[in-house]
Image (cartoon, rainbow, N blue to C red; front, side, top):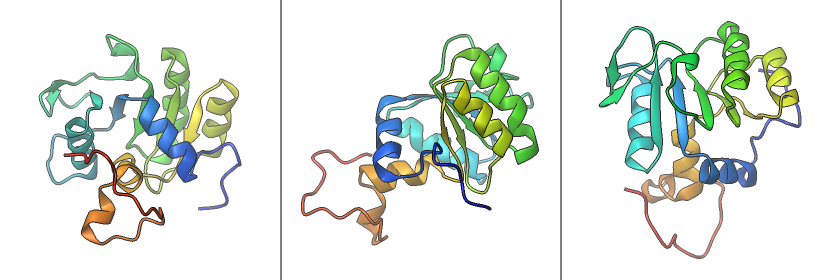
Length: 164
């Protein structure tokens, strides 16, 4: 993957702010299969206080949540459109994210589409690419370091609350 534009938020301060301020997440491509990364991520976020809106035309329900066929079918606003889809599908998802008034277009690990990222940014959305919401939340809010993973976040204080 080539260097990302400066407007793509991949630094710890911006990611922490995005995750703290945006708790309603449409997960596009969420699978009902427990062994898929999308399922694991969505289950983790649900357990940590996020509202999850599954988007996948193959299912009617995932993780006890109503599943919608596309972003335009969501019954209420979401703040983050999290994309578990191939890069070539991102332009249409960026258009839909803009149309529904999302604040953040989040492309999961290994996913980036330059034209879609620029279009989302120009429309006022924050853009995150090549990052996993679960990994970033655990890294920035105190989950990964408890199992010995070097998160790169240095602090002499333990978090005042631990996510479950």
